[in-house]
Image 1 (cartoon, rainbow, N blue to C red):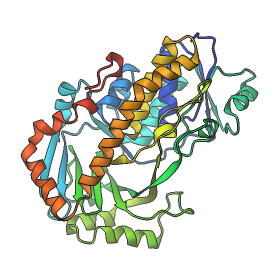
Image 2 (image 1 turned 90 degrees about the vertical axis):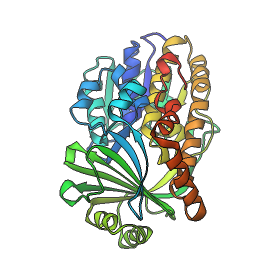
Image 3 (image 1 turned 90 degrees about the horizontal axis):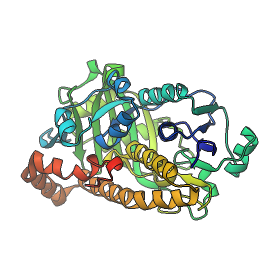
Length: 393
């Protein structure tokens, strides 16, 4: 596509801003439309695995990331009842050498701010805040800008408005899991937490992930439990009933973990939804990326990473193809199998993390026998993925 061909992005989250920066690196100008009037500091912690950080490094954002994130030395799996260590995957320096990019953790708002500052400094990126795109996105954007976009990229998340313009797009579905996101000051942390590792505590029908956040001098906690959704509760606010359900899920866990959960602050409740398999584009001028196209459960910590990978791949395809339909087909061919494999890994992790009874015993035995090197090798295809060289290990 030519630089003069207008491209528009709906959504200025991680997916949309990364998409804009990737297009700009290819010399393609872009208009970004965001319904929020301001981009506030929302969300909680975020894991950036090497397959994602590699793309951000290509965009020149690594110095800004290093100013705010931490690079844990390992990902450790721990029994939530006994606090017995089950397995460990080395990260830190090992991630940089094995997967040629770092594994970092930071506040989601920090990444959003880094991407936003980069987009505002890029002459080819034009940001339109307070601009809600409804109905036919091509017509709505043409009305807003005075010119018809050649391509509209829906990067507006799981509740995407752009998705409605894609015949056969996937439907949103409740996953059967609830996520509680909490922040824990360092003073309230148990000795079972470490400032140089990501810890996943595993238990029957629930697990808890904890890792350090430099921005708050504390820890980010994400507890995922099996539960019921409500058609009226999507705003992330906790209630007494929901908090009781949350506490009950961990009543048989180690006392240190129960106390830590009780001392955490800023508890928010999120029913976790996914987007079914379906069409990602209309074959002409509208395409979806990230959660708008294929939101998945968070059991592999790859939601943001897949959006970042999507952005790089779609920008490459749009730059390489003269017409949008050819670029869309090329992009889908490159991404379908990758997304399917990550979904499969997330489903497996859910089964393994929430195992109980004999399955739990077998899981622990397998983890003990595999060892750190074998566990790291199992992740080479995921963390070692390099779209720029089409390496899909």
